[in-house]
Length: 301
Image (cartoon, rainbow, N blue to C red; front, side, top):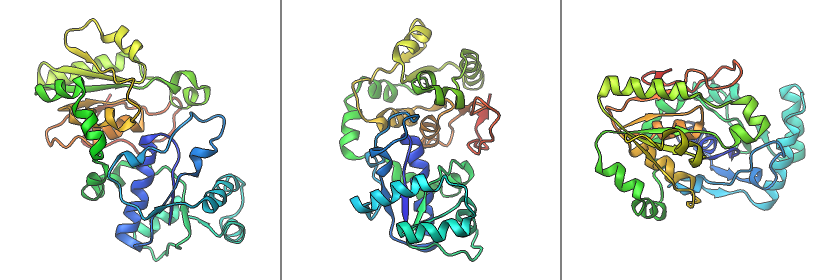
């Protein structure tokens, strides 16, 4: 079974989680990580790297060069509108692989007598909070950062600040490609300052005075907006090349204000505090696209 990863770290985590849940609960197949996307990304996509290995994840192996080539071709072929049966016959003949559709994925989990073939490829993002929450005890241990990154984290000033205070709330601002990439900007859009102001007020109304730990991929912008406030600490880890570091630091804060980003979502979800308060945007996409990312006990604004 091939977990065909794509996108940034947050998306890779959703994709891997779905494949791992399938492996452990249903078919016990060999779990193979495919990283071919990162060698031939579409031009419209934001450049990404294979990053999920920054965690202590478990898998059997990474795809061979031959498998990478086949899956790269399959990734393009699956965009051709064909009836599913015909598509699978062709893909198995041409690439020795089959596509596992979203419908089939959930049929397997619901034990609807659908069998997963060992050469099945999972391409979807599986951004489904109810799925991840259902298997929280299975997934949570996988996304602990590896020892090398833990040592890096522990040397950061921001790590010390978070550990020294008991009233920290992380606040994540996603800009980057949401501003600079026309495709991402049209699909996602950025959150307004009004959202962050409301979220900060809500948390302080519920929990009292907070120290807001500001994370962003645009530190200059975040500093301009929040740098003059005594209750805000701007995290500046721009020289750190590991995406999991800021995500881990967000998870260490007592509460979380997240952006419309799967990376941000995981920062809140990985927070192990049973008393945490997580504020999330009500609208995840610029257009009225349905999202399954809402978590029942999080507050939507």
